[in-house]
Image (cartoon, rainbow, N blue to C red; front, top):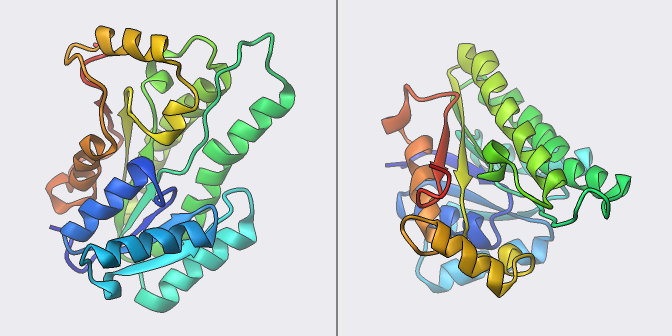
Length: 248
């Protein structure tokens, strides 16, 4: 489904990004595994090799989402190795759970540095090359980027921004045959979620979800595969909710 395509996936050393990378490899893509630290990306690359994935279809890079030089080096390494980037998955991000009164300017700045400005920096660098060949950009949004979230104003605001960028870029980059879409997950059992949601809140969210369960990271990967593939060649500017019906 993705044979011959090169996918650059930020935040792919764990969680949802890890399962996106796995599914893309299953579908014969060449995958750049990006971690906030190179050793994290290399650890997953070694794990995938032990599972039998072709080492020639993987490349590990460390990327600091707040540093232009780090981003440029990671993208240029990919171009030097594989000559192009067909798919960009902007999945790296952080979260927080502070009330407005407990939050600080620094909390908002840190959130936007990674979730918004980092995403902009990576996309801008990749598009320099992608505009020559066309491709697919997929941003990771959130259900709180559509409906908001109590005690999540910084995180929610950053994901509303991601949605705005998704639609704006879809309009701007379509002339280069670049499609831009987003996936908005609901409650997903990741390490990041476990560190920010207590058991009581987790159970409440499960009960509010029509499917009465919490998603696993692998449950999200199929939406990214669709948007990355030629099956979605006429899909752009779309935000796909994958939340078990929570936000209906």
